[in-house]
Image 1 (cartoon, rainbow, N blue to C red):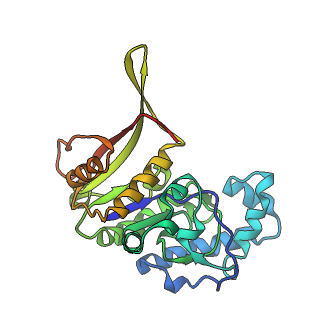
Image 2: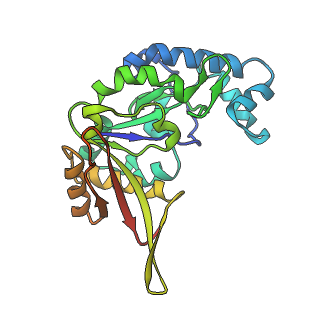
Length: 267
């Protein structure tokens, strides 16, 4: 099982650990692309005038400290990506609170997409940074498009032969779209909020709180030791865990399975 996650905009400080060792990161096939993004980002943010960098990165005046942080990426303290990424999804996932068996499964299964690194395992040691997939660097261009080539070379092998559970937001999904046989064993998830209004059920797409639901869902799968072989088995596993899941196999082979997880409460 491979679980594709988005990163978080907010990130924990790097602490006092050793700096980044690019050669130690997982998915070594992405190394040349990572080096190019890192070089341009550090140069952009270390130019001495942060206005241009903030404009490129889409940062407000209040976030100018993020520019200085990017300028020091090569020497800043690094820590496991699972500790660096914070926010609603990662709070709900609570990697630190998993059992040893569930944590081992998480280390093997979780892959976090990144505008800077392409994709990393939660065990990869990285510094805190600010560079979303929606950024367009002056030299490399739009990162979503930039990463498609390297990802197409590396990710099909990384996906192995089991389920690919794609929980990424649209910006990060643009960097790699499973195709062919891999797509056929890929499941995407939409979270719907069901409410009874005047005796009639109304459903709406959950935005902010869909991250919490996805984080809890992954956590529950990990704690249960569930390793579904494909989308159909995932539906069964989630229903066994108490989730209301609606799914229908795609009409054509080589298409991802869209799953709706229906919740009556959002939190």
